[in-house]
Length: 621
Ligand code: 3PY
Ligand code: ZN
Image (cartoon, rainbow, N blue to C red; front, side):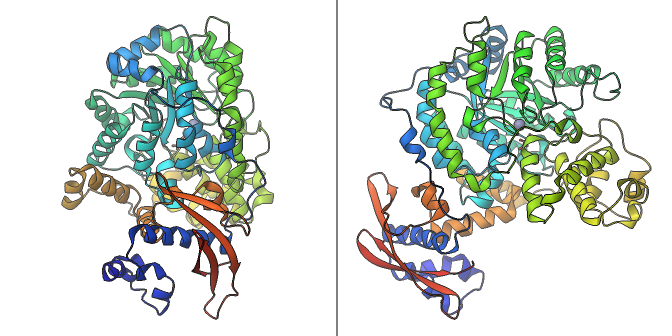
């Protein structure tokens, strides 16, 4: 086993066989699997304890202590998943359209933390509250818990397998449909993938636990969503919810592109494509109440599909939009647990439930139960404080720059990292200018990234956007902008911006062909579930998938660690408990941290179940 472990070690495979190899990996001298697991966890704990990537643990109560004390034995009550299983996707959609109660999707498990906490909430913290959500709010239409950025972030930053998360949330909430956000041909990535990838992805996601797929295309090109819609329909059991991405202001008389007529034409194509549910995806929170009423009324008059509204509360007024949409007959809306709501996230679930209680459109959700779940989420939010974007309150500037919720929090962090924190308003203005130069596009992943890349490049170059527009050849243009102008993400709703586009592409050869998969990749996609998942991880995110595999090999499954320990490490005098298997607990303590040696290695003296265990850690601080 020792030799095997050495040969399998990613550092060994990568050729890093310095003298430190064994010294840094004392676990290789043991062969007991649970001892190995313990050692790997200690390596992680030692590393975060020495290097403190996220600073000191915030002084806040543990979220677990805030969980409502309810009986978790026995099955949760029947919820809307039972209805989906009984009626099938068509019947489920029909019932949604026919019901009077306003249906609600809970987004705390995906979009809320994507938009507020850089998508960093770990599976453990989601799954812990799942059984409570299942029992206390079974009336939810769905829980959005997967897709969007969660897949990438799990692999890249959390050392988690996104598929294991999906399995775990499905098990935790068996009575409520799990919903995911699917970026059309980009699946959960940023560039289009071959149809085999979409098919394999959708099949695996549906069989692992996704019941409702919300599908969108950043440029509102229905043909780009077609493969995903077909793949969802082919499952026979999952719901294809297809979104129109909302931008601009349809009530503005000066609006000539994103008019009511534009959205109705788009909706007609969506309905014709076989969608079960029609979604309005207002990613930046631009849909004002009166416009929502107009759009929802028109959509429901013309089409039989239920309409599901998603918005972000960036300017602070989107509860009004949900209520206006509700009065106009919208069938379902999205909201997030109050402590994880507001600003770049969704409007507050309890505010929504309270607003409609005892009215014709009462959500059926119990306001007390919704409120009882809030202290847990408040605790979670405190715990992940290092990932807050720093946006302290709503901002009305979104009506000008139109930056989507998830990206706004991200861009603020990027601005800080680039030393541009003091010029954030310039970035906002440049984002608006970049959008105009690129042809006034709907801005949502991945088109929003293109606009953001250009905005940051223009700010960094101190460029005058008018000069850039007229003379792009004089500037370094981000690759994403060149690919976008070449048509990598498809055609633009308002047509190509000329002569800008021709100037950008002059003298360049840009291939926008989707890279086909290899025969070996095809075999893996058609193989067993585990093989398919690994192939999907590698195809969609080669770098992050490798990082995940490296981390798994080095540290094992980190779900045994509570988030305070995982993020902030060991504290002297505290007993840290990790449950590596049901009933198998490790008790870890910190005795001392040694000085760094000449190679920058510190010895962290820990105790593991009462016995001294040194851990050797490279000091990167
Ligand atoms: C995503 O694609 O991740 C989004 O949340 C878009 O709004
Ligand atoms: Zn969103």
